[in-house]
Length: 57
Image 1: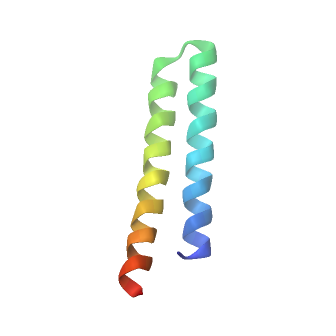
Image 2: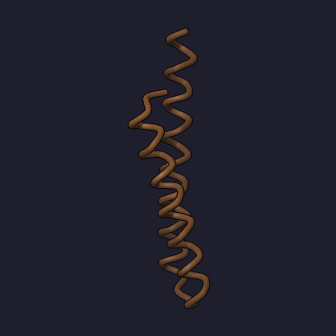
């Protein structure tokens, strides 16, 4: 897994988690949903990179 892509995936996941937490704290459902979406993008990027690593082996 590319170090740069792994870092991007983890950053997206962390950003999404923070956004979701803040959204819940202030009662903003849109922000909460956007945070979940950001986390999902990070998980998808991570899965894609793992799949690429598996195919390269």
